[in-house]
Length: 175
Image (tube, rainbow, N blue to C red; front, side, top):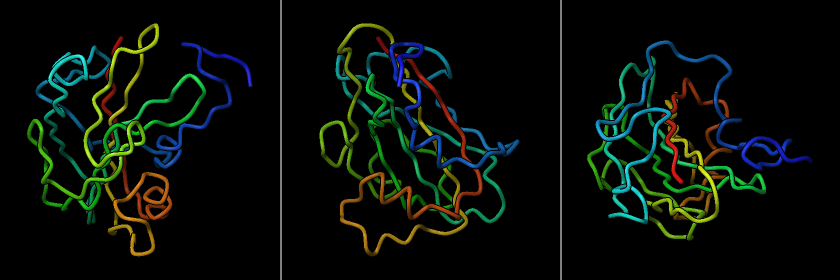
């Protein structure tokens, strides 16, 4: 494995990106009144600010959506997937979340600090980092009956296999 752009290992597997279907759903979109895709993450949503989780909105979920899963992650310089925010069992009628909301689904464990909460990104290490918020629309709720609770992202991704109708991303940067 060699070093690629931004010092990341080439050949590293982004586990969240790998769970997405190959085709994009044309109308499914994840947006935020506070975040702009491809732009800097406002300090308020970081550990250098208020550590607030950002408000989100989504539209255009495919017909047949029975549940949503939200994962905010980042690939570290060693190519490991770090999960900052994990929400699952989001009801199909839900179309967004308010700033600091914790009640729009079941919260899972952040791999950044091992707690059941939003892990705000910090400006550690040199350079700009890329954080991706991915919303998955699922044809059925993942069966997590055999998973440890609170849920971590790897068993959740495994339980989502074969159920993903569509996925949409919102990418932010922070340095």
